[in-house]
Image 1 (cartoon, rainbow, N blue to C red):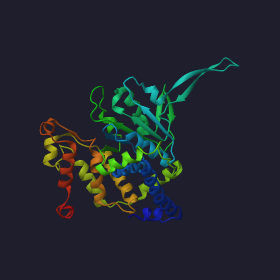
Image 2: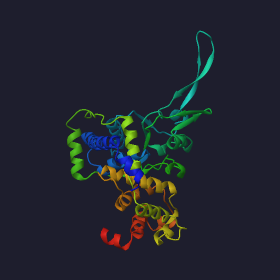
Image 3: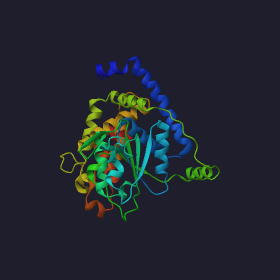
Image 4: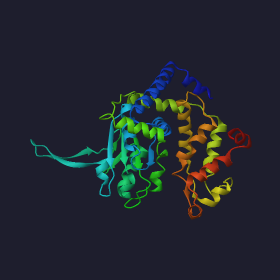
Length: 347
């Protein structure tokens, strides 16, 4: 740990932020559990997305409460929330907003006025994002990377915190448009929302067939607090050894890298970029903080390797013919990058 990190973490103001952080995370989880049954890992990944200041792509079957989860999270965070239903006829200006001509009744003078679109919010749910054409999908790119949009050459800033939580259904192939790699790379995580267990499904049925409406969700934080939490995440120290492991892990996804394992050389067409390394390290810092630790371990990196890289690693036709998906490749990759001592510990 550097002396600068020590001094930043030992101030009275920082100690207060840490105390508020623990209370807020416990409160948010409690509020979400009022509405959402199970899916603890997905909830954790969404909280990590919040703490890093990134965006999350949620992939799941229809009826797995993707939209309900995002809306509940936004309310528990005390943030403004807007939802866009992506459809094939959606235009970019329907997302970003547009300029209109307004006339002054007294002078007759006409001026252009910008009317903000639903993108100007804290939490934006892009529902079924893969059902809209690439032209409209690209309207999100500038906002996700630079917290701004450009309309008719004019630059409009989006106030932080800002998160895009996008959903897509994996089985709807007819009439869908796969997200381009440039946009996929802007998502911190690609989280897979799976079916509940039988006990959890029974709990859902009992809860929502005996009550009318959804329980009220109370805000546990404010936008200002969230920005402080994001600052706190960046102060969590990480050793050079763990940092090196994250770098080695991402570099090993590239088939032309000398240290790439055989499974990557055989099945991967394109590996992950340096943005994956940065996101992996930041998310690991957030995970450590959520678990009450002020240092990052290799286990943090390993636990987040799949959601960070599954949408950044592109497999080839050999993988398709051998029925090997990207998660299979990444699991073998993590095993191969571990040292012998780490492998023994994991087993």
